[in-house]
Image (cartoon, rainbow, N blue to C red):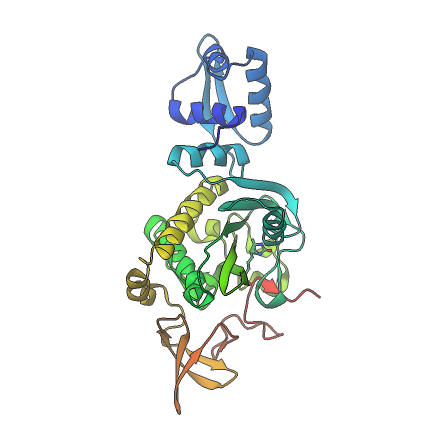
Length: 342
Ligand code: BTN
């Protein structure tokens, strides 16, 4: 596992100490830095939203953590969970998926993760734009090198979507579902979007970039008007402001475990059996390019089954829209929160 940075080690010491005080001297000895060095780092942490209480002769106690994403806190949490995933964090980036692509081209070894506080050209599916304002949401791209034939990769995004829904159901007690193939929905509104991009050569999937954009603490009214009414956030759905760093660490574990299960070929049974519990479209009337019908779950290869009057359609990841007015903007954009860039 990677060595922790000094800042992450300070945070880790406070996380371990819980409600107890730690003296500046002990911290300095532990980290092998001066007491002034400790003080400077604590001041820097305070600026980024950590709160400490200090008592003379006893030292410091961690009172609260920032709700914004904090890279050193993330490092400490991953370390405590035993997750040794290298990551790159940017305050601002064009798109974490694009940055992941550049890192792959520069020979970065996989797996790794790219996170950003904001994106200037966040990408959604089908060339749409993903609004990515700072401080409130998560923008994460995981990179893997699966070396599997593309045919075996067809279901991986759905599987990731499934485990992410299960995480919100099991850990947050929220009724989170997936609108095939990539919208994560809560209370009928979009909570997150998934964007998987793969590079295939010589019949093998060389690289897989799996991007998640998740509305964490944003008030959807702060999103452009055209999508505000169709979006939600974890804070709105759960009724409390959330720690984006803990959330990112949880999602990292969820995705890494799911990837391993997928590669080991141990996902199909839980996936196919569990899918109905997260299937947003099940039983809904939908329109497709090939006519209207009722969504009837997915098949083994991840295609959406739609029962029409003339038989059952098996849709690959194409565009569908619901016959009711869920997610229908004036432009008939079926993908709230990802819009065509004007
Ligand atoms: C969609 O619903 O259309 C998918 C949206 C995916 C957005 C995420 S944010 C992190 C990663 N970087 C991007 O540019 N896009 C994905």
